Amino acid sequence: MASDRPNPRVQVATVSADGVPSLRTVVLRGLLGDGTPYFFTDARSRKVDHLDANPPHLALLAWFETTHQQFRLSGLATVHGEQAAAPWDTLRVSLWARLPPAERAPFFGPAPGRLLVDAPPVESLEVLPKNFVVVSLTVEDVDWLVLGPPHQRASFRKVGATWLSQHLTP
Ligand SMILES: Cc1cc2nc3c(=O)[nH]c(=O)nc-3n(C[C@H](O)[C@H](O)[C@H](O)COP(=O)(O)O)c2cc1C
Image (tube, rainbow, N blue to C red):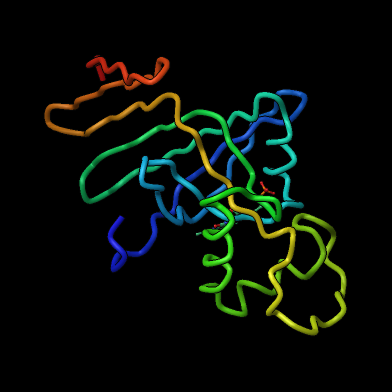
């Protein structure tokens, strides 16, 4: 991902323990060298609660208006918090370091999605809070659609260490 472009806004879907899907927009912060996408979020959020499931299914949707391409990725998520292994530990620290104060503040307030109440003022926004987590997606399936003409669609599925690709009808 080129660093001079804004990070894409994508939608990620999770499923609750009783099978109810939910969607939200997140900023795609980057792709690891092997293509693993990741974003950051609050460990106390509903999406992270959903990812406590076994297996932790996550789907990601990206639509690029300029190139007319839709990517639908699905696979298993990993939540990288305080105990994150390399390279996620350093990535988590550097994502926090680049975050402006206004975007840091919610991590010190009440959990997302609670009733709005007057929260006590935050004393310091410096210390990396444990609820600041990075979520990565180990992609197992990709559905790629290009709006033509002609429309084109292909699927990519990971089987073991190999990616199998097929052209599909749109
Ligand atoms: C443009 C945009 C970007 C957003 N980026 C993020 C993000 O990077 N991480 C995040 O946790 N929430 C982000 N949000 C907020 C989420 O959409 C969502 O409201 C929040 O994470 C709570 O979701 P949940 O209750 O389903 O867990 C963003 C919202 C918008 C509109």
